Image (cartoon, rainbow, N blue to C red; front, side, top):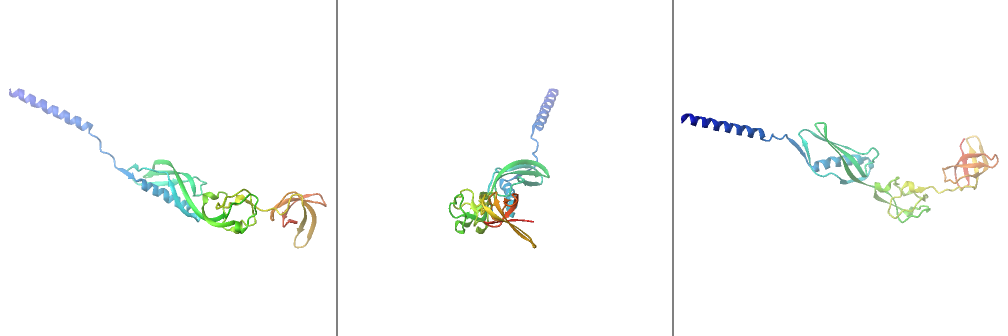
Length: 246
């Protein structure tokens, strides 16, 4: 009997040992430490970059959109951010920027983020609807703050820069007056008679000519010398005179 009890005790002990071994083998391994970077932190890093990018614009800048949502779960270590904008992006309007997230200088995330930046600057705007062909007066213009993204093609800071120029296509009231939508008013018409002037400190020579193209003061046009029948390049001085440089 004693021998039988001893054998039963040994069997029970062996069973307990097997169970303990099996439990230890299936227990979950301890998780590695993680960095939880909040959405607010990421958005702040992108916003800081956008504000620095727009700093040279001399405008009132505000970030209107950052297309990033959610927190980041990253491995333990030092987290750093890099934002890369398109090479030709001037820092305002809509753009797709690259967000590069590193942990201990190793890239852990690289994704595209849509952003929108508003940059308000003082610029010349139309005081009323301006029709194609109109020659601008000071009363046709005013100065107001407008988003630089509305002034593609360049904007004017002072009304005097536009007065006397001609509108190339209709502009609605309160819209920026763009440089690329204005042109000089020709004072010389193609085919008209002009005086060709050639002079320096010693000599002054004039000849009769015919304009082969239209031009405003300062423009270089082709004219025909009626005496020699030769065509030459000359700069428009006024409505009746062109000048040859020599």
